[in-house]
Length: 231
Image 1 (tube, rainbow, N blue to C red):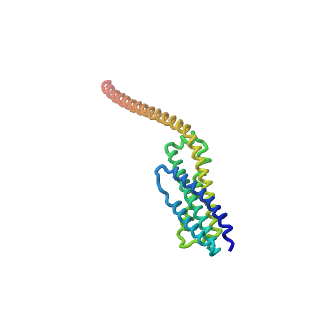
Image 2: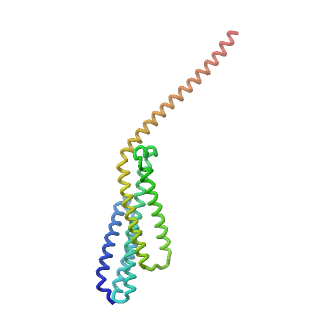
Image 3: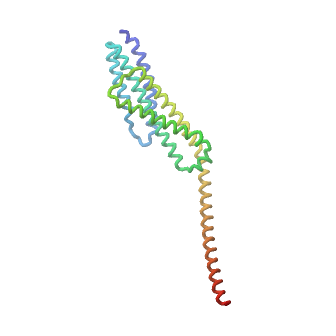
């Protein structure tokens, strides 16, 4: 069975995937101000290690078992990466909406005219797609057994690539939004000043209205008194 000559090259492939997924996990730790421990990526890495050890032990025994364990290791390492990127996408989306919640829609439209037309729909589409992939992942977890065939490996690879690109896109939008914060702050200050002026004007108008009513009542009463004396 000619597996040993491929063993090193397959381990090299796994090593490349590991470095990429580890980068995602480190990014997640850096984007984690609350210092939370995220279990999902670590569990996937642990499962990958289990497959790698089985892959080593089976390389001189069963070719089918060897490649099954190889595909399992690949899939779990990729899942560790896309679990991390999924959490990163959620974190950045939440951060974006946390930034914008301090501004009214008027502030955003004036300070960042393209947000509602260009960026917000794309963020919502990423969130929709992320939810769809998460549901698919949960459904797969409910299965009692899983065969790591090429279809599963390719699906995990595609999911990883999607989450990686989604993270890069959201991170790009986040930087654009942060660059527009000064403009939105200026619009917010102008709006608040105008609202204050409007409030003061309304108070003055209210006082004038009350005063006019009082004067009208007094004139009416004075007219009644004068009318009695004239008669």
